[in-house]
Length: 153
Image 1 (tube, helix red, strand yellow):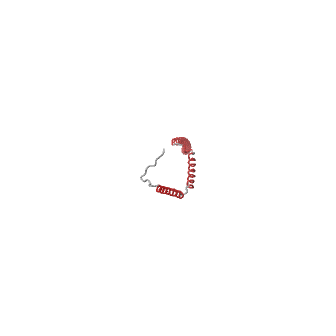
Image 2 (image 1 turned 90 degrees about the vertical axis):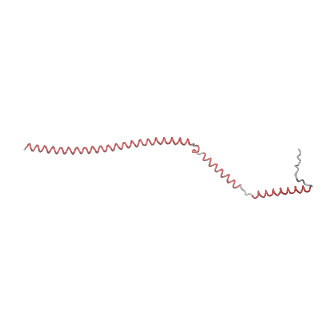
Image 3 (image 1 turned 30 degrees about the horizontal axis):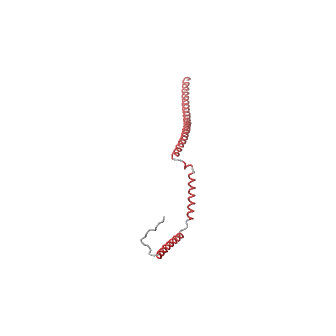
Protein backbone atom coordinates (compact mmCIF):
# COMPACT_ATOMS: atom_id res chain seq x y z
CA UNK A 1 0.00 0.00 0.00
CA UNK A 2 1.90 2.80 -1.25
CA UNK A 3 0.38 6.19 -1.48
CA UNK A 4 1.01 8.32 -4.42
CA UNK A 5 1.37 12.01 -3.78
CA UNK A 6 -1.61 13.97 -4.84
CA UNK A 7 -0.97 15.90 -8.00
CA UNK A 8 -0.79 19.64 -7.39
CA UNK A 9 -1.30 22.47 -9.76
CA UNK A 10 2.31 23.59 -9.40
CA UNK A 11 4.77 20.84 -10.00
CA UNK A 12 8.36 21.97 -9.65
CA UNK A 13 10.27 21.83 -12.86
CA UNK A 14 13.50 20.61 -11.50
CA UNK A 15 15.07 19.35 -8.28
CA UNK A 16 16.78 22.63 -7.41
CA UNK A 17 13.50 24.52 -7.26
CA UNK A 18 11.95 21.69 -5.27
CA UNK A 19 14.75 21.82 -2.70
CA UNK A 20 14.47 25.62 -2.58
CA UNK A 21 10.75 25.37 -1.81
CA UNK A 22 11.46 22.69 0.82
CA UNK A 23 14.13 24.88 2.42
CA UNK A 24 11.65 27.81 2.58
CA UNK A 25 8.96 25.64 4.17
CA UNK A 26 11.36 24.24 6.77
CA UNK A 27 12.64 27.75 7.47
CA UNK A 28 9.05 28.94 7.87
CA UNK A 29 8.28 26.06 10.26
CA UNK A 30 11.46 26.74 12.25
CA UNK A 31 10.56 30.44 12.67
CA UNK A 32 7.02 29.47 13.67
CA UNK A 33 8.32 27.05 16.33
CA UNK A 34 10.76 29.67 17.62
CA UNK A 35 7.91 32.17 17.79
CA UNK A 36 5.81 29.74 19.83
CA UNK A 37 8.72 29.10 22.18
CA UNK A 38 9.29 32.84 22.61
CA UNK A 39 5.57 33.36 23.26
CA UNK A 40 5.64 30.59 25.87
CA UNK A 41 8.57 32.25 27.61
CA UNK A 42 6.60 35.52 27.79
CA UNK A 43 3.64 33.89 29.61
CA UNK A 44 3.42 34.81 33.31
CA UNK A 45 3.90 32.14 35.97
CA UNK A 46 0.51 31.40 37.48
CA UNK A 47 1.67 28.57 39.74
CA UNK A 48 1.62 30.71 42.95
CA UNK A 49 -1.83 32.06 42.15
CA UNK A 50 -3.14 28.60 41.36
CA UNK A 51 -1.59 27.21 44.56
CA UNK A 52 -3.26 30.01 46.56
CA UNK A 53 -6.60 29.33 44.86
CA UNK A 54 -6.28 25.62 45.61
CA UNK A 55 -5.57 26.40 49.28
CA UNK A 56 -8.60 28.68 49.50
CA UNK A 57 -10.80 26.08 47.84
CA UNK A 58 -9.60 23.51 50.37
CA UNK A 59 -10.46 25.88 53.21
CA UNK A 60 -13.90 26.54 51.74
CA UNK A 61 -14.50 22.79 51.39
CA UNK A 62 -13.51 22.25 55.04
CA UNK A 63 -15.78 25.11 56.11
CA UNK A 64 -18.69 23.65 54.15
CA UNK A 65 -18.02 20.24 55.65
CA UNK A 66 -18.19 21.76 59.15
CA UNK A 67 -21.47 23.44 58.25
CA UNK A 68 -22.86 20.18 56.88
CA UNK A 69 -21.97 18.46 60.16
CA UNK A 70 -24.20 20.84 62.16
CA UNK A 71 -27.45 19.29 63.42
CA UNK A 72 -29.52 22.15 62.02
CA UNK A 73 -28.45 21.26 58.49
CA UNK A 74 -30.08 17.85 58.86
CA UNK A 75 -33.46 19.38 59.70
CA UNK A 76 -36.20 19.50 57.15
CA UNK A 77 -39.02 22.05 57.18
CA UNK A 78 -41.37 19.30 58.35
CA UNK A 79 -39.06 18.43 61.26
CA UNK A 80 -38.78 22.07 62.25
CA UNK A 81 -42.56 22.52 62.10
CA UNK A 82 -43.10 19.37 64.19
CA UNK A 83 -40.61 20.49 66.83
CA UNK A 84 -42.16 23.96 66.95
CA UNK A 85 -45.63 22.44 67.37
CA UNK A 86 -44.45 20.18 70.20
CA UNK A 87 -42.71 23.12 71.88
CA UNK A 88 -45.85 25.23 71.60
CA UNK A 89 -47.92 22.47 73.16
CA UNK A 90 -45.44 22.22 76.05
CA UNK A 91 -45.37 25.98 76.58
CA UNK A 92 -49.15 26.21 76.34
CA UNK A 93 -49.44 23.57 79.05
CA UNK A 94 -46.98 25.53 81.20
CA UNK A 95 -48.90 28.75 80.53
CA UNK A 96 -52.18 27.04 81.35
CA UNK A 97 -50.68 25.79 84.63
CA UNK A 98 -49.41 29.28 85.47
CA UNK A 99 -52.81 30.79 84.67
CA UNK A 100 -54.59 28.27 86.91
CA UNK A 101 -52.13 28.99 89.73
CA UNK A 102 -52.56 32.76 89.24
CA UNK A 103 -56.37 32.40 89.20
CA UNK A 104 -56.27 30.36 92.41
CA UNK A 105 -53.96 32.89 94.08
CA UNK A 106 -56.25 35.71 92.99
CA UNK A 107 -59.28 33.86 94.34
CA UNK A 108 -57.53 33.34 97.69
CA UNK A 109 -56.56 37.00 97.79
CA UNK A 110 -60.11 38.07 96.96
CA UNK A 111 -61.41 35.74 99.66
CA UNK A 112 -59.10 37.38 102.20
CA UNK A 113 -60.21 40.83 101.05
CA UNK A 114 -63.88 39.83 101.31
CA UNK A 115 -63.21 38.43 104.78
CA UNK A 116 -61.63 41.72 105.79
CA UNK A 117 -64.61 43.60 104.39
CA UNK A 118 -67.05 41.32 106.22
CA UNK A 119 -65.07 41.72 109.42
CA UNK A 120 -65.18 45.49 109.01
CA UNK A 121 -68.91 45.30 108.35
CA UNK A 122 -69.41 43.14 111.39
CA UNK A 123 -67.36 45.58 113.47
CA UNK A 124 -69.44 48.44 112.09
CA UNK A 125 -72.67 46.53 112.73
CA UNK A 126 -71.52 45.72 116.24
CA UNK A 127 -70.71 49.37 116.85
CA UNK A 128 -74.15 50.30 115.49
CA UNK A 129 -75.90 47.80 117.75
CA UNK A 130 -73.91 48.89 120.78
CA UNK A 131 -74.76 52.54 120.05
CA UNK A 132 -78.49 51.80 119.72
CA UNK A 133 -78.49 49.51 122.72
CA UNK A 134 -76.75 52.17 124.81
CA UNK A 135 -79.13 54.83 123.55
CA UNK A 136 -82.11 52.53 124.27
CA UNK A 137 -80.75 51.74 127.73
CA UNK A 138 -80.31 55.44 128.57
CA UNK A 139 -83.81 56.23 127.29
CA UNK A 140 -85.31 53.29 129.16
CA UNK A 141 -83.43 54.32 132.31
CA UNK A 142 -84.68 57.87 131.99
CA UNK A 143 -88.23 56.61 131.45
CA UNK A 144 -88.04 54.36 134.52
CA UNK A 145 -86.58 57.22 136.52
CA UNK A 146 -89.45 59.44 135.51
CA UNK A 147 -91.96 56.71 136.31
CA UNK A 148 -90.26 56.06 139.64
CA UNK A 149 -90.21 59.75 140.59
CA UNK A 150 -93.83 60.04 139.54
CA UNK A 151 -94.82 57.04 141.67
CA UNK A 152 -92.93 58.25 144.77
CA UNK A 153 -94.23 61.68 144.65
